[in-house]
View 1 (tube, rainbow, N blue to C red):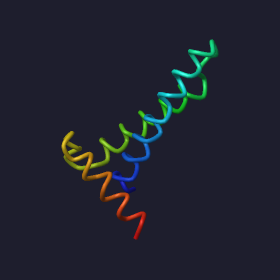
View 2 (view 1 turned 180 degrees about the vertical axis):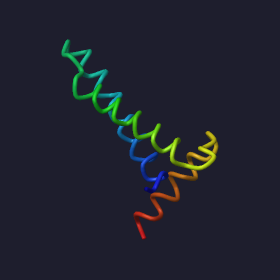
View 3 (view 1 turned 135 degrees about the vertical axis):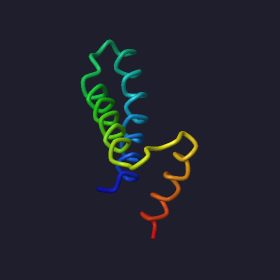
View 4 (view 1 turned 90 degrees about the vertical axis):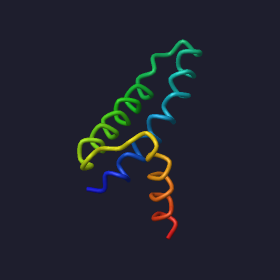
Length: 74
């Protein structure tokens, strides 16, 4: 399993669910799908942290994003 890819996807899912939560609350709707996305993103981040030997430092996350996007583009 590629823990870098799982981390990036989990962070992106979590980041994209935040505007959806805000939109649901402003429209007086229950944020079911947004909450599910936030939970899914959080679980993916936890799995990435647990499967990477030594874990991740906060300063490594931008480099991980760059490496994953470079792999996807090549």
